[in-house]
Length: 483
Image 1 (spheres, one colour):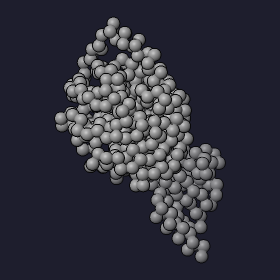
Image 2 (cartoon, helix red, strand yellow; image 1 turned 120 degrees about the vertical axis):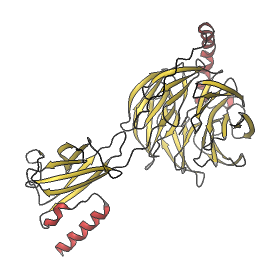
Image 3 (cartoon, rainbow, N blue to C red; image 1 turned 135 degrees about the vertical axis):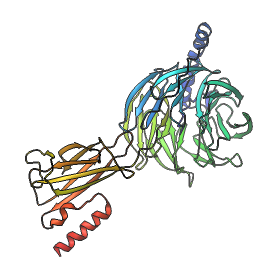
Image 4 (cartoon, rainbow, N blue to C red; image 1 turned 180 degrees about the horizontal axis):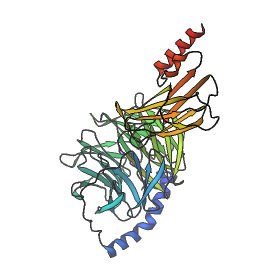
């Protein structure tokens, strides 16, 4: 779950793409000024590190906004920015630890890494690193964070227990993307300026192999089984596929213009690639290693990350100051979220929401309930009874909406038994269907149930149509009664 964005700096002149060249020119102009300020200000002193607090409930996306020196926090349940955190100068990369308790942000303008406590969304310490920190990756055990330093041609190894750099590894020229294999044994680093990928042994923190790939390699992602590493080649508009057993390129996939960042879905079936040159995302099938669809997004897409449940992909649009949200079911953009200036990378963390089950019955009821609006439609003293559960246990304090034909009848809150009732005050039609809906929240998935009343069959009043099997039984019962 890294989904880390990288900056496409190019030292090749004519071989760099237009978007990469734009970034490179900007960087060169400010770099000498930043260096002068660093000499005057000295290194940032790490703050005291408090005991980790509990991570947030739900799924959140952290977006590094290079132009505004901030990180936007997006709530995946609502697709809205719920917090904005000030970090260092020109944040490029962001990664979350596996427990989602910390977010590490590389600040390319002042050669630091900001550490964010995700429970409070505050910076708790700042770590000095070498020249041009770019992209980050966290080890699966959460013990280490690896940071590529573009101008230093190195990778810094941060101990997350002490938040200090414990080792510095020399790699290729212009390291950008970085990823750790699921077994924690290897780190793969894309070297933008020499068209290679360095392979690091995590036991010794040494480079054990160097793999030649395409022109200007930038992003790196690994499949969940660790068998394949996908590398974007910004200068040749391709993705190289590396077999990790042999550390050789086994195929090369044409994608869009100036591919930068990429992310693999949790099931390993798809790879989403941001093409900053043509404002698209290429979707690769890992079974065939071919592009199966191309999705238009915002201006200059950079960072890519997939939600833990694999349902959505978040893509940062650098020139649009926004994030596109893609549904993986339809491969279409379903939301666009305004964020800070020049968003680069995005990382998503959080536990998968727990599935819920909602059942609904229509009964002749004498218990208390909330009356519906006059003439809204109902069932002559009948009552809708809903029950919401998760993993077989009742959910208390959740809001249930009762509707018919998209008309809101009433809104109730579940009690300690997970139950909510809605009394129907008037009858509109002999054949009427009602729906109860739980919209979901940060911890629980949405669910709904429908029940239909048929005056030709009194037994249908208590028929639960909350799943397909009940629907099928209802259809057969209706056919029999009219036969």
